[in-house]
Amino acid sequence: MNPELQLLISQEEIAQTVDGLARAINQDYRDQPLILVGILKGAFVFLADLMRQLQVPVQRVELIRLSSYGTRTRSSGTVQVLLDLPPQLLRHQPVLLVEDIVDTGLSTAKALQMLQQQQPASLRLCALLDKPARRQVPVHIDYLGCTVPDQFIVGYGIDWKEQYRHLPAIYTVQQLEADA
Ligand code: PRP
Ligand code: MN
Ligand code: MG
Image (cartoon, rainbow, N blue to C red):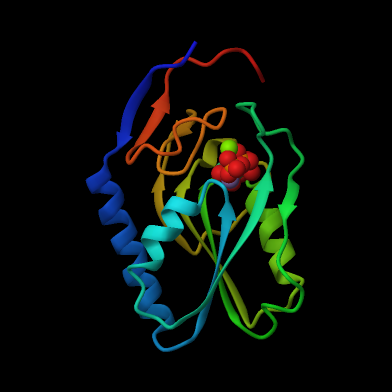
């Protein structure tokens, strides 16, 4: 049975949040050519909206794919790398990692570690959502959109069992099966 969804962040609020993040990034990077790295699948909607608000020279957009939840609603505790970057791509370049949500922090910490190995000139993290209640590893978020409560979140790229990524707003899931 599908769970009930309750609106948490409206389309308008998301747009304002993305706008504010883009402004801060534009100010900080100015004329620096920037490489954006999004984490599939969850970040693809946020990345698409954010990058179109950027006025900095975006030199390249790359995507990696990580998975820690699979079809479950709790982190498995291990992060699988399903798509990696070509080698040497980030060397000596300013890099911005773009993620939809930082929950336990395991996915973002893994991604930051992968990217750092390529020795970028600088590496920062932009996350639309932060759920600090579930954090297992510390993650510094340089550009943060909104803090969310300790509830399962869907929409705007984020899934529940692969569903609801297409929803234009962000919702909390009210009833979850005991599948974790
Ligand atoms: C979700 C979400 C983040 C990550 C956050 O991805 O999109 O990437 O979990 O959780 P964490 O901080 O506990 O690691 P998921 O593993 O579900 O893959 P998906 O993006 O393909 O849905
Ligand atoms: Mn994800
Ligand atoms: Mg997921």
